[in-house]
Amino acid sequence: MAYAERAMVMDGASADRARTRVRFSAGVFPSRWPDTLSLASSYVNYYRDGKCCDDESVESRYPFDDILKSEKINRCAPGHRCGDPTLTHHLGCFTSHLGAFEEGLRTEGDKFVIWESDAPHMASVHVADYDELARRLPADADMVWMQVHQNAPGPFVGKFPSKASGKWTAEMRNEQLEAHNASSSVYLYRFNKQTGWAGSSNIMWTRKGLLKVREYIKEKGGDMIDAWLYMGCMKRCETHDCMNLVCYDAQTRAIPKEWLGGFVPNWYEQDGVDRAVDPEMYLPFDKEHLRYNQMGCERGGADFEQHGAFFPVGLEADGEVFEDTINNVLSYEGAMQALVNPCATALPLHPPHVDARTASVASLALRKKSTDGILFQSTRVIAEDVLINALRDERSKSSEAR
Image 1 (cartoon, helix red, strand yellow):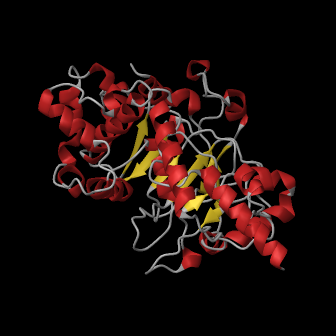
Image 2 (spheres, one colour):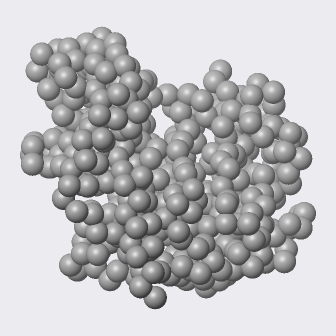
Image 3 (tube, helix red, strand yellow):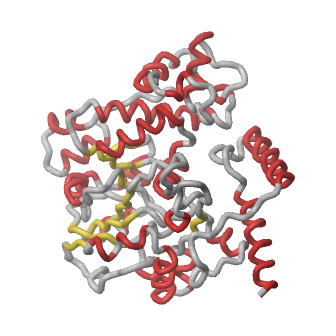
């Protein structure tokens, strides 16, 4: 019996019920093609009617280009990611998630959880709390991240009693085992202010959220699953290929209140509280980034600046209201290098002007890094260090002019 099934039985479910609620989706392991190529092909069958599979003008045909061209010769197509030891993991992970997506959508459920193989020791929510978390989700939710992380994800939304206190076992090898067993609550946050994120080991999906992602992939393609989904939660625009996912984050160990921006109620740290924040107290921060930061600065000072401040870069494009857009997100370190004051700088940041020569150098550097396996997700955007340097130069000139 798999760990997820055992955890459900420990929580009172029958063995039969546990088995019917847990399904396995096999990995495609591109390094083993052609042995697992037919499985990869079956996972992309649901996407073959989209532009991404049949239109080579689509900017990102990932992962379909690798699979479709490999199908023709029944082995990994030369020159593709399936043959690159540094990239085959990302291709396999994304394609395996496609298979898990379809496994979930074939059920009658409205919510499903997708685990990667390392899910138990990275989990931030116990299986025993899944049903209640699904019931408590705001109606606008597309997905919920359920993985331990270091920084604050966004405004606090609510908390409810955990059924898992003392049930986190050594078998899980969980990073926060002791803290999770000691906690009496599950905490829910809006996931739209996170920086420095990677990891897709534990995700709860709503059906509407998964369908939104599925349709986007069919038309636009995908990328490295965790960083790509993260940007799907962060990026905001109306007409320029944003998924605009509505994302939340659930943790059994409370994020320190000093790391949170926006409104934090006085009952946040109280035991036994079962309560939600009025949406009017956190939804405005979807766009009011500076006010979110300023409230965090007042409460947490340097702790907030390092672990909770948000540094979005907007999109200047036709058909967009700049103040409502997010096209990129700086890390705390990057924002400091770019001379951004977390507590005072207007947000979103205006993207810097990057001349043709700088853009060309950045493109070559990205290509080399991709070849070396150092960078994968950023092949379609300016490297962060180029963006940071350009922002710093422009802000320095602006300061000198004043």
